Image 1 (cartoon, rainbow over the protein chains, first blue to last red):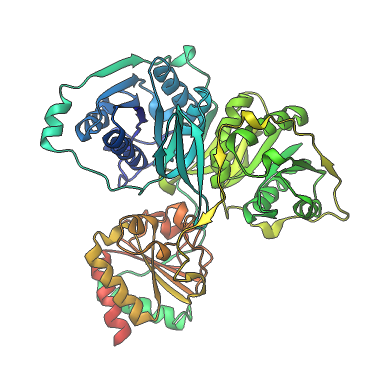
Image 2 (image 1 turned 135 degrees about the vertical axis):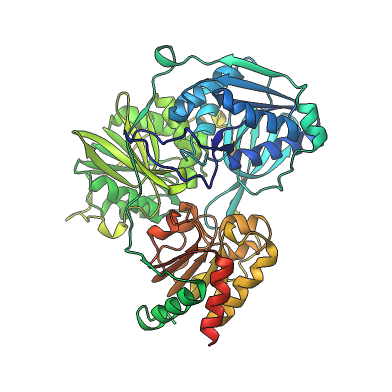
Length: 256
Length: 319
């Protein structure tokens, strides 16, 4: 089974994001980056499918030089090879531009299955996987909890809302977006890290700027969210704050 | 004209559809609403009671069970024929499954997970959260109309839905759909083991998130819950890790709750969790990150380490 997993490098979850002075993007000069967590589950799902059914796992990531960090990590966890679509402006690219770059990189590959995470921790569009499926003309299903591999087909378990699920069958090649938490992530072993150094990374230049696809959106302004409620912050040492809070919950909120 | 795509299952409209319709009405243009499926009479009548110009009903056997291919094909034809200025959808799991493919088929922009429409220099923009809700962005869709926009669940209250003086006209739209061209073959939806715990009935809830760090610390939350007479709940990552059973999960993929008191411990406040608990009467958040989005909806907040604060709370309650 030839599997492509699309991985995005995002700003680490606990990074204090702040808007740039022009409010069009964030200050990311000193930011630290990591593998988008939902994509890590897609990678893990791919590695497990390969262990069961054989084949090859190729990771694909769009971005500047720094994304080789997550590519190396994916290779160290067990991916066989990688495609790095070199773009310097990835943080400002919208989902359509990213999906187009991924589709261009994938079109010359032999593929049975394309996996992505269900959304990214930065933009959070939840679009890229399905856009890519449509651009590659592949059948797709989203928010997948389980994958059964058949002869030229897949039977996958979709998560619906409110605790409902549904099995869906479709022909391969196909694209799935993987629900986070469907498996336990593995960590790279020292052996894996050493082996990753010898694995192939194919670098392709994506058409950018005026030659690339026109972006479908423009961020006019970035700002901290408005508070929906006037939060009353309780300060002081833990014991003091806890006592004050309990008193407020009893006497003011009447919640106790 | 704005075209809203409503969503139903077994002929029942969901709340997110009413919210998307309300959001469209508030943009001030003429609104039409479309509904896809089979056996839609009751749901169509319900939509016709709203203040809309027309209800478009795409009733076809091939649409009885949702498939991405079926919906994309039917809606591509519909949008081309109706030529709306904007297509408005709820940001549900179902929409997430087909809307990006619809945007590719139409070759148009799609903005997802928006919370409101705003005017910026005469241009229509949409506000949406980014970076797990730590920032908001006003985003302008580019390229020719119609742009596609999905609205986050709960972002617009359906209580604001305007009713029409008389029922709106309903029009059956022909659906020319070759069932053989639909590549997904869906089976009947099902629920996993019956929910053992009905958190929606709980009067007080203590919920834990990533900040609880390890399974061994869940006991601390249990002790606080006991002191409060509360149920224990969690955000998704905690249940995924198996630290609490799945039926303790609050959020879009778990239960929706509205207790008198909701105490969020080490929960950042990602929207997937917040949609399940923002209806709580009093929300208390304990988080060491003062910027955590949970504080935007909290009535009371303590910025601090839950491992210091929770034992102190237990002591204060038992005093």
